[in-house]
Structure formats: C-alpha cells, structure tokens
Length: 455
Image 1 (cartoon, rainbow, N blue to C red):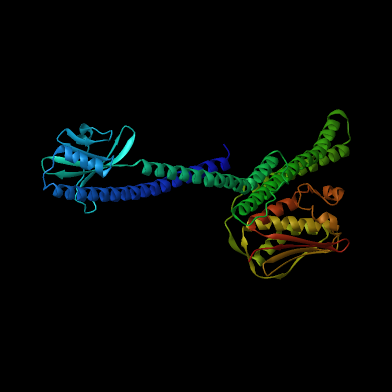
Image 2: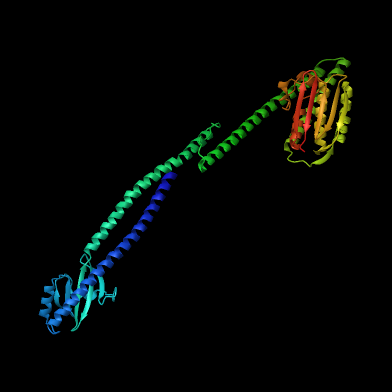
C-alpha cells in the first residue's frame, strides 16, 4: 500500500471517529432536551388531570364509586389514562396491563412535581408514565407516547449521517488529491534514485520547492554529486593504477632485457677482456637501476600507508645545509654549482621525509642543467624553493609531472638514471605535511619549484 493511501485511510478514520463522537454528543444532548420537554408536557397533563379529578370528587362530596370514576375518565376524553385499585382495572383503554405497570421502575419527584415518573419500552413503543397516589388504594397513571420524540431523533440521526457522508467523503477525496500532489516529488526522487542506481550518475532530482521536500531533494542531489565524484575518483585511481602497472612493467623490461642480453652474450660468445668488462659494466649499471627503481617503489608504498607524522619544528637553514651536503657530489660530477640563498625561518614536519623530497627536487634540477649552470635552494616565510637555470619544462607538461613514471625527456632522464618516480614521492610527502607545490618554468631559461607549508 502506498504511503498516500495509508495517510488518506488514517485521516478518513480519524475524521469518522471525530464526527461520530461529536454527532453522538449532539444526539445525546438533543435526546435529553426532547425527553425533558416530553416530561414537562406529561407533568402538565398530570397536574391538569389531578385538578379536574379533585373538582369532580368535590362535586360528589368526596365519595366516588368506580362507575362514576369511569364516567369521569371517559368524559375527560383521554385514551392515555389508567386507574387501578391494586390489580383491578377501573379504567384502562391502553395496551398496558397492571403487571406491566407493577414491573415499571418509577423515580421520585421530578422538576418539583408531586408525581413519580418512569420510562419503559413495551411492544415496540417507548412510553413516559406518571403515577398519582389516591385514597382507597387508587393509582392513576398518565401515559405519554414517545413515538414523536423517537421519530425526531431518528430524523436527526439520519441528518447527521447525511452531513457526515456529504462532508466527509468530499473531504477525504480532496485530502487524497492533495496528498497525491504533495507526494509527487517523492516519486521524482524515487525515479532519480533508480536511474542513478542503473548507472546514470549524472541524473539529478529536479525539485525547486522551498519546503522540507525541496531540502530533501537538495540533500539528495548533494549526495548524488558526492557519489559521482567518488566514483570518478575511484575510476581515475583505477585508471592510474593500471597505467602505473603498465609503466612499471615497461620500466622493468628495459634493464631486464639488457641484463639478460649481456649475460647471454657472456655465456655464448668468446669475448675479449675489454668487451667482457664492458658487458659486465652494463649488467652492473642496469642492476643498480633496478635496485633504485625497487627502492623508490618501496618508498612510494611506505608513504601511501603512512596515516600521520610526528611533526617537529625544523630550521630551514639546517635542512637546506643537509640537502646541499647530500647532493653536492652529484652536482660536482655534472659540473653544476650548488648553493643556498636567503635561508630563514622554520617549518613543521618530518626532517627525514622533507630531506628526501628536497633531495629529489635538487637531483632533478641538476639533471635538467648543463655544466657551468647553478642550482639554488632558498627558504623564506614558510616557503622553500629549488631554482635551476636548465632546459625548462613546456607548460602543457607541468600538470603531469607528479604522475608515476612520467618524464618530460624520457631518453635524457633514463640516461641520467631516472625512473619518473621522484616527483610522485615528493607529492606524497607534501600531502602528508599538508603542503602545496607550485611549478613555474620557462623553456630554455629554467624552473622554479616552490614548496608552500601551512602557517
């Protein structure tokens, strides 16, 4: 059963119960009022009958025979008067018997009247009866038929039922239509959810209302945006992992092929001592390259599993001096001058990881430079910059620099012993420190790489 149908059914039930209770209260009040009027009328008839009976009795000096009493009641012309002496009927033109009257329960005086009154239902008739006690054990009963009251109450009940149906049914129909209109946006949300579940991740709920349903639709769209972004991120991550494995396999293939080829040559060909030394040199250099590649891969995996760092305050001068000492032999071998400038301030971080990152950047700057050029390291205002005067990087290549195995000049990088993992390691180290990296480069003039640490 749909929600709007449930709400309509509950609302209809509540309306029915409320109307039934209110109609019952009104009907009860009207019945009490009508019975009160009937009793007043009956008491009036009783008082009048008693007054005339006393006058008639005075006319006969206070002694009446039963025949005279019957004459009086016939002359009075009432078909609703009964006169009994014990169980003996003196006058009775009604359907009631003395036994009926004796079994009737009477209450004492009502409305200040001197007669007792009772209500009974017999043979399909509702009756009001008053009793007047007379000397000589006489009892006079005055009967009032409530048929008119019953008819009026029945008409009132039918009228109330008609009003209930005439008002309640249209009200329930209107309520159902309003609920259908109100619940329509939920159908839109449901359709959107089904389409998104089926793969249409760009689908959104088009609901512009400003009520709670509109807020729900807005939150639903935010959730869909988050899910789509997450799926895109996962897809991109999977794509990068696939490319990573392909590139890694390619990077392994070259040195392994060289090692295998030179080893096979040494096994099958009778080489001179110089050729043997050259082949062994190639095998050694390629094995060193594999070792560096394996170590960098292990470093990447270690950084990827790192959740938090023990941050300490690091003096920038000490950090750059340590980087300079590590990279100086490589720079001197290439004929590159390595220097520091404007070293001031401190940053928060892990000394060894930042040292590793800056060494990677410095080695890349040395590889991009030619003999006689200068690589400069400087630190100021929470920023550390590595500047070279080398070949520079094309603008369309900068955005890909931090991808694993990506190299601008692949032949030159491999000849220099690179594998394209250095900047990937730097990027992960900076992410752990909450820092950013900005690259500014001009082809033929050099490159500036600036690390910006949070204050």
